[in-house]
Image (cartoon, rainbow, N blue to C red; front, top):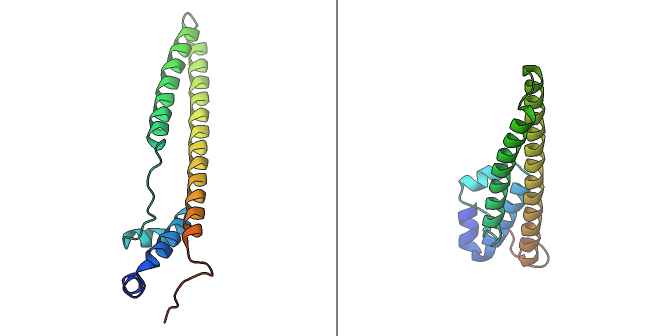
Length: 134
């Protein structure tokens, strides 16, 4: 259908990309099918995407190093029970922070997808589809 649609109406690529963006945003299984068919939402990375990726990775590394040094300093001279308690508590705090970071990044990604969908929607022809299917 996609190939036939593009032969008849070459500007339909925008509609197919819009559909792919909406389905990917909704996490619909059909988005995988469109991806396998080669239909992808033509998203160019924003200039700050690489910076955000590097900043997030640096944050994780710095948090790990600082957490390790802090726990090492806190457990120095403690008996074995307190060392284990502090290390387990530190591990739990680290796990919670990583989980919060995951959900924050996921929310950022959802907002980017919503902006992308609005951009596609504004580029579509007025009145819905510009052609009819037979």
